[in-house]
Image 1 (cartoon, helix red, strand yellow):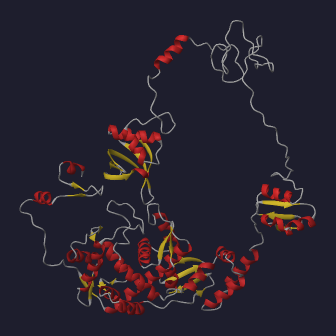
Image 2 (tube, rainbow, N blue to C red):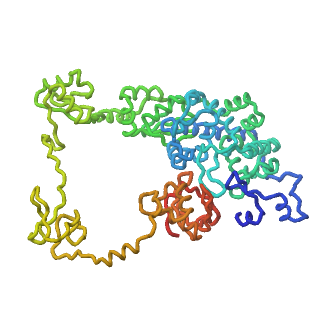
Image 3 (cartoon, rainbow, N blue to C red):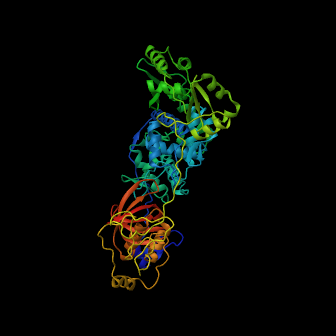
Amino acid sequence: MRWALDRGLLVQDLYRYSAAHMPLEVALALRGPDWSAPFDPVPPSVQLISVTEAEVERESAAAATAFAAQAATVLSVCSASPPARLKSGGVGARELARVRKGSQAPDDVVRIVLETAYAAGLLGYDSDRVAPTEAYDVWAEQEPSEQFAVLSRAWWSLALTPSLARDEIDKALPALAGAPPCSGSLQARHGLLAAAARIPAGQGAEDATGLGQLVAWYRPLAGPTLHGGFPYFEVVREAELLGVLARGALSRVGAALLANDADGLAAACRQLLPKAASTARIGADLTAVVTGIPTAQLAALLDDVADRETSGTASVWRFTPASVRRALDAGHTPGTITADLTAVAARDLPQPLAFLIADTARTHGRVRIAPAACVIHGAEPALLAELAAHRALRGLGLRLLAPTVLLSRSALEPALAALRAEGYAAVAETADGTVRVGKVRARRAPGPASTPVPGSVPGSVPTTVPGSVPTTSPGSVPAPRGSDGAGAIRSSGVRAAGASTTVEPSVLAGRLLDAPAEAPLPDPFGSGIVYESDTAEIVDGYAKLLSYSDVRQLAHALNTGTAITVDYVAASGIRTVRTLSNLVLNPPFLEAWCHMRDAERVFTLSRIHGIMPA
């Protein structure tokens, strides 16, 4: 691209650093005078098979039911623990993996649910989290058919491809990143359903991915995304996951979306999706199985007292001591757990589950842990009871644990001061239980440096007589403070015996002559090193995470054209180590040839965490 820009074959957009356009004259000249745009008046042929309407509706119902169940689970996980947002925006790979693990849903379903729920107003940004809104509480109480209708309408109007996990350079894409609207995604989705609607009745595509060729013919400007050689693979896959396409044919849900018929969509969803299940089959193997989509109350109860193992058209929970203990920690009692499970069980509770609840409750809370900043104790129970009831000491948060032991929410020093202010002669203890001694050693400043007394033994500590003038040899000049008689600086108050500290005047003169004639430039970092070039100053203004030595190394590589290795964190949060060459500084970006990708790449200077030699 840089070669073409230098020769005028591409034109750079000054307002978008990565946009480069080819002039029409250049494009026509490259193709030659005999070139004409490709045109095929006949749409491509797709291999068709015979399918009945009942087969299409059955498969569409299964897909829509599974998606609705997984969507309810994904949003339930987001409600219990809202995903964190990346600093650059969106939900990164780590949070997506956590939601995927908690909901037992595949990655493309999780991405579709997050994008459609956000578009439908069920999710919103809450500071650095993506949390459900109040509309989600209303949505969660609805029947599965109504829930699915809301999400399918949002999917039909999305101006993006929600299941697209990687971009054209195979870089991971976050969900809910706030990408600009893409009309090509809408064109591809509408073109897919329009192409499927043209298939004769009683027939369907043998391979649904072949419908992407029809989309490319009916919507040539939609901008196809290739996956394994199939155009619009993600769009076709999304339509199959939502039951819009089934057996390569358009379902009733897809026909209602294509016609923008809200009433027809609601009727189709009611016919395809079953009502929410309010009962569970609890077995002696300590599992609870719900066939279909559980109601919000049933799912919340089972999530409280059991661990979800699978979700979809049939969901399975397993009871364990840890899950029952979690319910007891949340405020449930053994009686309420048994009563609630009995109310939703299709039959009587099995005996192993009753034993599990009773055994877990028997050991629950036998040992308790209380928060305390300090402990107050004494030998007189009446005195401790008086302290606990004292009005002026309420701020300490005193709690009587035993007749002679009090817990306080206040730290030791404020508690000690408060007790003494009320006339109680309290004493403090150390960590090992002994009484802390309050005597403070008097502070003393270091004495002035002194010259050695004549006649002192070499190697001994120099001494002076208080109030006397330091003694020097006749005719000598008193040595400066902190130096010995020869003019050399002492490193301590003890002088080494036999050490020669004389410096020749010629050596000192040589040092003065070698000193620079001018004072150095101001040091911005206080490290004694200044900017070596304008490049270093520019790099330092944008690469805020680099140390000054790394800034100098990067500036040297830019000025000399040498290769370097960088520690880089992408917008998705993925950390990689890249070897770069052909560096070009384009603040706030660094353009270079990436050896790992074997292609030109653009790096943000503020995301570079370290510099190493190549």
